[in-house]
Length: 212
Image 1 (cartoon, rainbow, N blue to C red):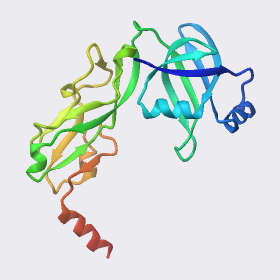
Image 2: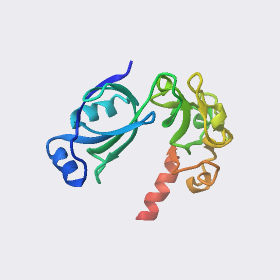
Image 3: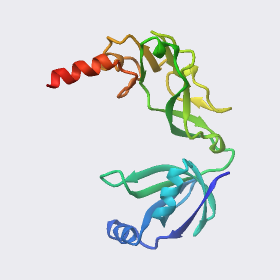
């Protein structure tokens, strides 16, 4: 079930008005889509933060407007602490939308137990699906990942009816030999800032020795 969010209308737009709203604890917003005119809105900062904490991607707007909307883009302040602007896209149950969804690893890999290093090479993936099928996360199941193995996009379990909009042969997770450097794994297709899990204690010790 979608989360409700109370919004108010903004009679004026522009930087000065946005700053005034933020001083009042409000987050400026805009609603667009479905061929209808854009509407300038605002919502309480605490309510927006609650939506983010709950991982809601589709919300039921109420107050100044009443419609289902996709959180299309959320802008944060310089420190990434407070939301400063939000874009809403009107959606209906039959719409198919493109969204980016975080990826995480789930399970314990046999290759990790054998001394390998798990690398998460893709932190998010863009999928196309109906609004009610948007997942909070997509799990890369590593329970059968052996040393030297990989999990590719086509191995991921997607919500029913969802499809990936990029090459499904790109690598999401790898289980490499301990001597392989993270930057080498990052050279694999689709790799972005690999997250390394299970790095050998010996390697950490070598790094500390080098620093000393």
